[in-house]
Every structure is written in C-alpha cells, then in structure tokens.
Image (tube, rainbow, N blue to C red):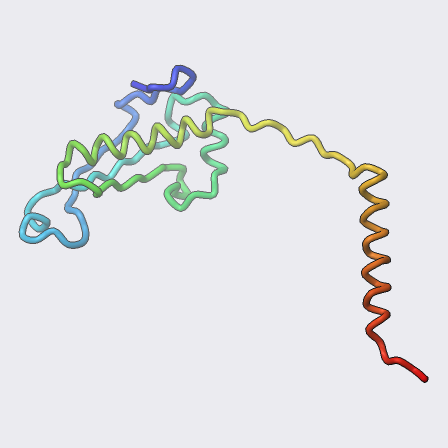
Amino acid sequence: MPLNPRSVEIPLNEVEITAMRAQGAGGQNVNKVSSAIHLRFNIAASSLPDAIKERLLHLNDQRITKEGVLVIKAQEYRSQEQNREEALRRLQALVDSLAVVPRQRRPTKPTYGSQKRRLESKVKRGQIKLGRGKVEL
C-alpha cells in the first residue's frame, strides 16, 4: 500500500518474486539460505497508466531489459522477508518518482543589460591581456 496519496498502487500479482542465495560474505549461512530477492516487473503488461509506462520504458536504467522487464535484486538484509519488502519499496519509489510529471522548461533570453555587461567585461579582459605584451622603446 503506497504511503503517498498521489502514488500509483502496484498490484502484487503483476510482480514476480524469486528467492535466491545472496552474494558476498556471510559465513556458512550464505551457502544454505536463499535470502536474496529477485523481483521482476513486466512494464508493458502491467496495469500502470500509459504515461508512467512510457516514462519507465524510456528510462536509461540498466535494470530494465530490452524486453521491458524491470529487474530489482535486494540482498541487503539477512532476512528474506526484509529483502522482499526492500525490493517492493524500491519498485514503488521508482514508479512514484515517474508519476510526478516534470514541469516543462520555458526557454528565456538574457536581458539587454546582462548581454551588455558580458561584452564589456570581455573587452576589459582583452585590454588587460593586450597590456601584457612586449614593451617597445
């Protein structure tokens, strides 16, 4: 259940969660317990609004495959349940970040005064550099 009232809810039946063994150090436990979570979310087949789907698919993120499947691996915690919650939280955070439509940038022009000041400073700097030349007698 999303905490943000404007966020989009992701149904759990659209998320494929697989448990696997975590990488890295962990002693004997790491070789026995499947505590890492591999979350797969098919963007195109989901019930997300089309605008969010479009933004997700055009996101330059290495977690999104060519087929349009978002893959999140959570292995931070020793508990499978905590890793499952972490993976779902990351998925929800990604979708929530794309649910907010970015404001369109309105191009602006530099003011007449700022253009004039810029050119004057360039001329002044050029005069300083000219003064560094050889002194002729």
